[in-house]
Image (cartoon, rainbow, N blue to C red):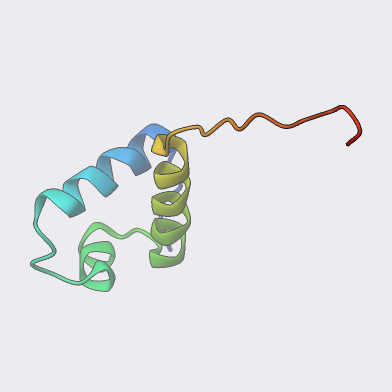
Length: 64
């Protein structure tokens, strides 16, 4: 059974994985730490979105 982790802990695991320069697969990394690979992918995507720059674009609200 996998352990339940909070967002901060997931972010630490994600940072740890990328600090390894991908020397092992995500599947192996998760297995060694008893964490769910599906959750790893979910949180990796969440962290990536959180760190993405916000892009604002002006729009014209007046008609033609």
